[in-house]
Image (cartoon, rainbow, N blue to C red; front, top):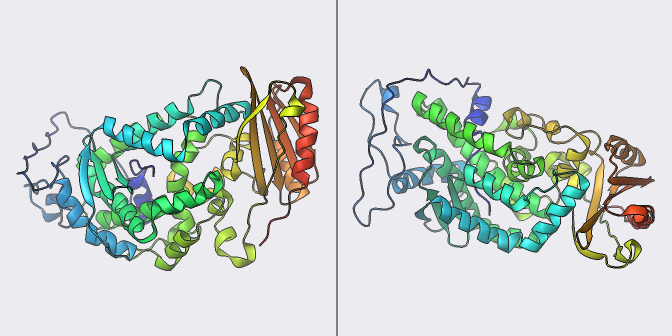
Length: 464
């Protein structure tokens, strides 16, 4: 399970409570954090930063100039655990271990998880397919981009394999309680629903795994945001803490925005869109006291199966509007491409990634996107019905075939018309199907496109 810093947590909370966010003027004689006091053996992990007790008002709120004593991360976890139970509406079945790690250990954890759930061969095939289709610039290192973004975003993570919350030693102290609230929610959800079991059930279907990620990270983001709102309302976020959070998030955003839109959407979408999905698309309905347990239980027991359902929550929650994907199958087109070509792998894009082909780049960290998810999609892809891509190779040459089906013929025309012209991409359309052949197909592109289009047109309608 991926985990990183809670992006735009302060901005999300401010958006909900209507509080302005303004950094206080910088001071040249800014006081240094109090040095951390070492704990005695057996008292838990060393403290991270100077963090006021999350359950007591800050010194500023009390009118005192004496800051409260720093808390260890273990003490913060112990203090916030009952708050998370209250906000999430569930009880911990067993204690969660708390550990400390550096960036190298965290990277090793992320790489281990990637090897299990996103194997290197599949990642390489996806990288080449995304480049062929124009979703990423040529020579993009997909794995490197993801790990670089994770390195900057991660301040702590929950490891479901060991039921352990791991905090990184460079986590900003002012963010400790917020990060703890998010990751403890993962631990709580894992004990009740089994996060890895959900990931395993999704298998290699990227649409299903995206739906699982949206539920898991949406739950964590929802509880974290409720916690942050509570802290802001109670005056427990100091001006200094606010500034530190802003500076940290600005640094995260700078690195994230250097990565391709594919990476940004894959990493941030589950957080931003997941919470909105769990609130049935109404961000203004975020509760103050307890998360909507019945809806969260339903989503964990029966996760959305496409990004379309996450982007358009009514297509999941409303029985009359429920929209399931149409299965798309393609034959092995290597014989059509010619001697030496071989099928390397296949996958899906869904509405979330297809939108990159038909619309402008977006600021995935903009909290205003929670009010209206249209920034994450566009009219040319909102009629998505299903898709499948295949990637073929012959030596250094590659070809990617993308077959898409749409709810109506009009939807298919809108997608075809919105695709930017490219000398390395041929587009074929008929009825409610559109096929894209990209890469080094040469004079075989037309035949490949016709064969793929014939297969796409035979895709059955989705059941409701």
